[in-house]
Image (cartoon, rainbow, N blue to C red; front, side, top):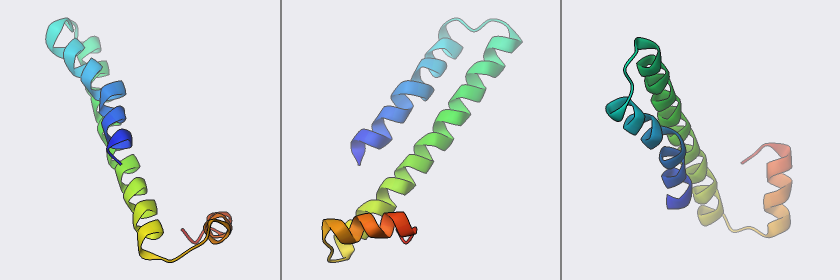
Length: 77
């Protein structure tokens, strides 16, 4: 789970934050950086929630691989 929740900030939030602090001078650059940071935060929350949902589903339910694949296709996960 840490891989997913750790890579989104690394891709979207941190570079925009560094650019905002280090070299964003115009209003347009600052707005673009803030927009990217907000998008990264939303993406991080979304991927974390999805990872927890799937992890809980796998850990709390006795299953076989075929059951899990069928449930994903049916939309029960």
